[in-house]
Image (cartoon, rainbow, N blue to C red):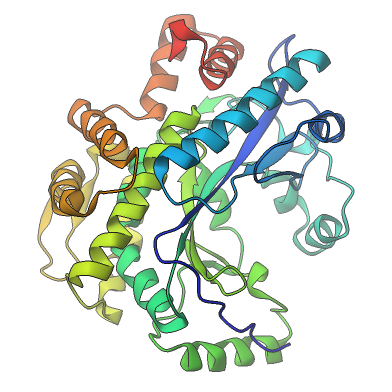
Length: 376
């Protein structure tokens, strides 16, 4: 199979996908209600889409093509409100977060869809362990070569995205000591990690041809990279975010991606290099393990600094390029979170420390998702 033609898109447009948990309202464990939710959601006229995910206790929502964080917030809010109404009818709840805190993977059911069945047949138990929940952000690129350049520039900021979105400290009833344990599950897949360092689409096409000739790759969907090009959309897709606990925070993360992309296109602040990836896995691990308290190693200079400091410096660097409606407010909220050292993983741990019951953590997270005033 040949690599798809890259279809240019309007630069800096956004698309956001959120994978969400469906839980019962008895003990707040995952519940296999995706099919019922999809049936009810079809009655709503909404932007974007609502689709199943690999197991039947998951659902994925996505915006349409958005031009601003404000539009992302409005579209996600509309879909969120319809999800909450539908869930109430089924006596279940919808929850954000990168992992469910105490579900048991062996109890999950693979959703009845051919691609999911193929994945299950290939990957065995890993498919059910893939009951993890992420946010994906697409950003529009003017042409194929620009997309690859954007991808490799954006890779330096993967630790930012992980630490800001981290919301998966608990797995199978235990505190993992990671802020984002979700990404450890993704690394179990053989085609995860990072894209090869090529900056021309013609060279990427040669790589893709070699991979398809091996028989292990049929399409771009087979790559579980942290960032991958999406030629059919004319975007790059950033995939390391844990699903946030609220659509407001999901919007702020998308605003940060758009601001970085605007900075790259306007100023071309640096040229990426293969050597950037010498510290990539270390920086990635630090962000997964320690969140906003991580150490960041600058790929160009080898300098060690706090991830917080690097984040705050970058937020200042992109500020002149923040023009889209809703962007300035979103980045201000991110900056406040960084100053406080407070991500969703910390909030989840604080609730567990107070309640000593993970079911209550999940219940309160469901209220946070539906924007109940006392929990936002």
